[in-house]
Length: 178
Image 1 (cartoon, helix red, strand yellow):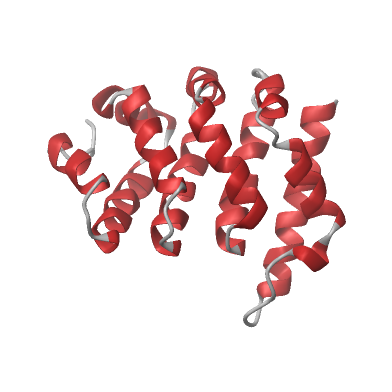
Image 2 (spheres, helix red, strand yellow):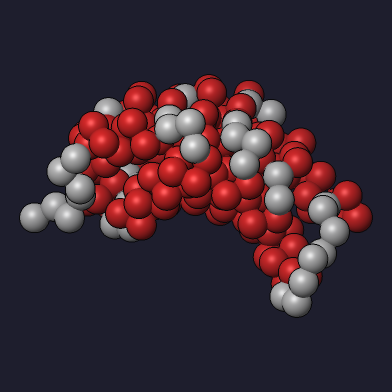
């Protein structure tokens, strides 16, 4: 039995609503749903692979930090799917370009979701060349080498998050390059 919301058309409309808080909540619903490989499969089937990834790419381009975070979190969860799902992500150039932008200049929590996604995609054994062609290597190296260019820490525990992001970026680079 799938726990997916049967109102797919409603979710699709909410993902492109004019109100940012509505888009954020729609991505949040999907993020919370896609926590198992079976649910990831349902999401790809029900929403349509290209349609879902297109909506995520659009969300990753949002100027609203909350929408951006939720879209990046959905992508990170989807990257935990099967090799087939990972391959779909790796083949979607718009998603990869948007993810690269997140690695370059997004808030730290968004970068955290993005590097988790890159790590899972790199670990999956798929087309790591797609990550290289999308220009993902350079921002990963930059994260590893230049902590001073990361957005300033804003609160307790932020240094730990920055360290986690750097460590995950290093692991992802290792998988991609070896």
